[in-house]
Length: 168
Image 1 (cartoon, rainbow, N blue to C red):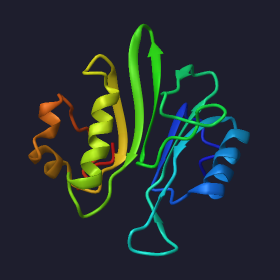
Image 2 (cartoon, rainbow, N blue to C red):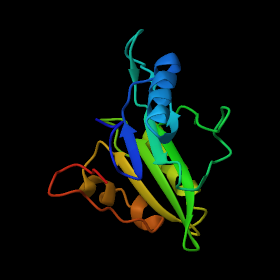
Image 3 (tube, helix red, strand yellow):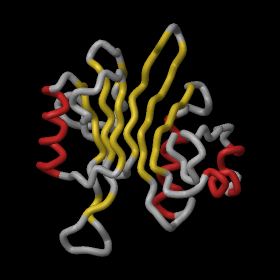
Image 4 (cartoon, rainbow, N blue to C red):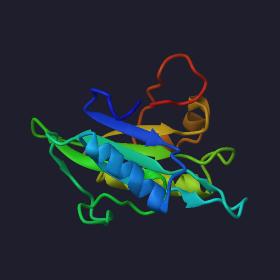
């Protein structure tokens, strides 16, 4: 499904891929014409063999991006575990950051989710860059608004339709 899409940028949240499986997925996406970066899934704290999270970002090669310094690999395609991946773009003189993220379920804006939110806030460079985040937040937009954190950093939620969870 993802390989043949005509979009310019794609994201995959909750891939559950790490190690060789994540590399194989990255390679398939690259063969299909995507420039791909990913944050590998983390080992599940509840299972010896399971994992959780994992996020991919793909963009077409013609779209010029800057890879963040936290990314490793021969082309800066591997982000640290942490379920946040992003690229910096410059379009008509405007700095834009496109990010994809996966937030853990059932914990709200605490613990690991708070750390992910802080990472997202940091990549904005104190508001100097426009930020677009597509994520599985695993909480309702109302819950995110009630946390007060969005207002503190001047972010706004835009949802995809009337669903009760954040999709965009």
